[in-house]
Image 1 (tube, helix red, strand yellow):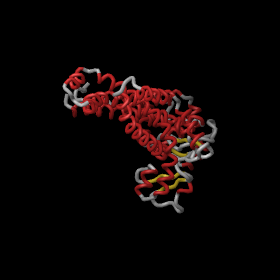
Image 2 (spheres, one colour):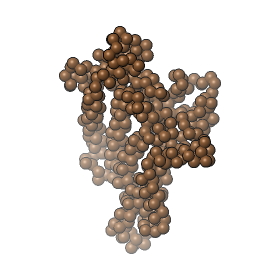
Image 3 (cartoon, rainbow, N blue to C red):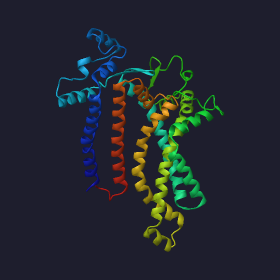
Image 4 (cartoon, one colour):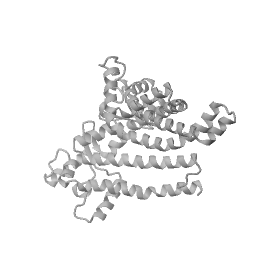
Length: 367
């Protein structure tokens, strides 16, 4: 099968996958008591309050009413259809948590860039560091360097993110033993110019930067080096916490792949023909070891979304993870379901990217 047909078929498979994800989230939605949904829809208003009082919540910018959000009197397929239409229209519900008050889609737009910033930096660092380190210890199995490398990866793989994050806070955050880095937030309020520049849109205490919505990138694009540096300092400890676990997981797979590839007949043949060991490792062993690693690499990076929930809570970092935790604690049903849907969509897309990259690297893959 040609590569283009493989990609088309893989993209078409997204349709039933996304449908399954929507059905799962909708089932969670419908399994909740309607009184809880009403209470979550209009926070601060009793679920049995008169409709006139509930309508008053529209002053908060709501565009829906009690009967407009869910339809308990209709058959389930019709309710599901209306639910999907609402999602496509951007009506994901409403939520009130300590760091945000407004529509769920607005919360995702505001906080997702901060999470993306953490995940992108941590992923790049983990890949850049793990490939040479995994190659180094994988090419020297059962040596001292290999033993140290395995201990390093076992610790990184086993230590919970909240333990490592708390440890880093106690050592390197302000108020700790070596106070270098900030302990909370994505950047300091003092780093924001007064008045804020046109590329920084404010909404209460929240700021959204343009054009990427990622503060570090936008600050660099607009030449605000002070804000960029301040943002970077706030990012280092959360990124280190995320990177260590990801780095350890990738290194383990690369080492195992290297050891397995080194035992293959074509490697023995190359050595018997006098091919230099550096070329054998670079051209024959590492290339084959990276093929299965790329598969798990995509899934491990996608799993960062689970770890980022804990990390953002530990560092009080305003991203999707902290938003999800606060929505769960405050019983904001629409916030929890909205973030769950976003995390699910990202996981599905990550699987698609991994399959396509895998097929590009290994032409034999056309399943």
